[in-house]
Image (cartoon, rainbow, N blue to C red; front, side):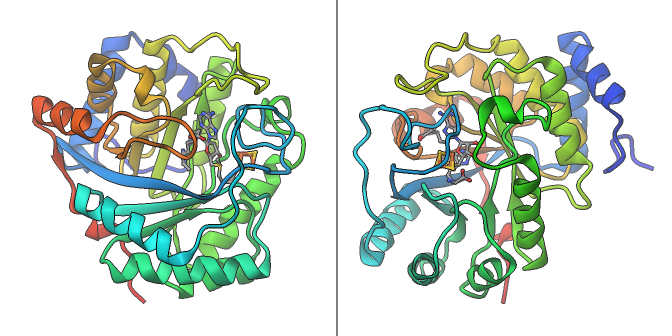
Length: 325
Ligand code: SAM
Ligand code: DTB
Ligand code: SF4
């Protein structure tokens, strides 16, 4: 058995013990797991595009796109396929290997799936990996997206099962798990993680990662988002997470899911270069690249290129995650 085996039977006590380790001990373990299972000094880059923005019927307390909160966001209908293809081409030219399309839906309708499949085909034709995050899916919808060539589906559990109803009341934790199962059954890669800094406890962070690590198959991609506190949302005045606790969450994700890509996701614009370097050391090996996330800011492309160069981090080709029909 290797020192950091891929396991699916983590107890909550074990995960909490990792969180409680002295910071240096935890980072040493995470970096060891990283080097055992991942190529060091490498990062995978995905570019996000919001293809349908705002007016979402859900009440996720962190989200600027919920129709229930006045965040001053301009709503936008589903984009034209040609415009999305243009943005995907630009993302490829800038150096992204995966293009991720997000829509502010509770779940897509039949006509939405028809447009999304056309977008996915365009993205694939450019030689990019494709990813989408469109809300809840049933089995047929997941299969249609897969048949169009969708490589990854992003659907986050967001927080622990225990804290979930403090953040979202319009769906429950099991709904998230059901969609993840439909995505798996359709044969797609799963991108699933959550948000920290929403007022949850360390135990909630441990439970969130425990749920992910104890899935039958680990998500291929695990985005760890730091809350972007948007004015107008219920979490606008939330006290930010201690940066070391953020890095601890990345490190524990790396140890629990050693073969997965751990993505340093939302919140990078609010982080120093030094903190990001620490997150990479803790095992993050994937980022969102491009000056916008979905509706909020992300570091400039120039700044990211410079940062990666200063740290001697190469960009991964990304081809390994693509599914082939
Ligand atoms: N509507 C779909 C859904 O909820 O699955 C897809 C888009 S939704 C915006 C995708 C993810 O973005 C959420 O699950 C959440 O993890 C993340 N997110 C949204 N707003 C955020 C914020 N203010 N800070 C950090 N992450 C956020
Ligand atoms: C994920 O885990 N984070 C991304 C992506 N998956 C879709 C979204 C972050 C959104 C941050 C708030 C915004 O820009 O609207
Ligand atoms: Fe809607 Fe997704 Fe935002 Fe929740 S996170 S309000 S489901 S867009």
